[in-house]
Length: 222
Image (cartoon, rainbow, N blue to C red):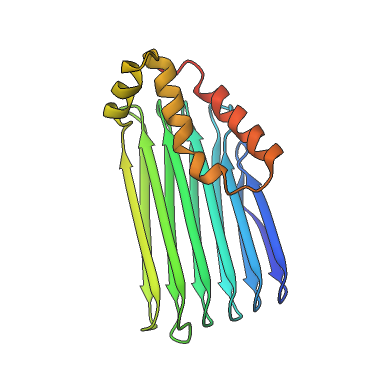
């Protein structure tokens, strides 16, 4: 597993785009100083049917008013396996963190998200949210999700949530009633599932490239 370290200076803004590729395992250790902002986007959108990847992120907010934003998309097919572990530590007061990761798994693919969020005793007024949403499309596909909160400060605003389910059949029926065939309606709903994350990219060219990649991977979905 490759190891990468990053130090974000006071007041600095940093945006990382991390793409899963076949047989990639990577660990990032990141430290943020006061008033710094970090945005990370993770993409698991590979057409290699045998991808095996493991991404681990550790982020320490070592200064006050640090902001951390982690967004992720995974569309896993075939026998792909992809896992994400995030370890975010609020060490100082007034830190903000947001985590939003979404996976679609189909065929015999397996996805995993483990999110560890720690608020230290001195990190008063922390504002942290961790969300993982998943759709499983096939009986043999699997998604493992494990959000974890450890809060040692008493004046904080923290929440976490995780859901794993199937495609909304009522929404599918609604779209078919308005003239769309089942395959088109299904692809539109699955693409829309990622919209909330895609709009956070902040770069139209990259966002459009990701939308095209998702559409290609969903082509023929029935």
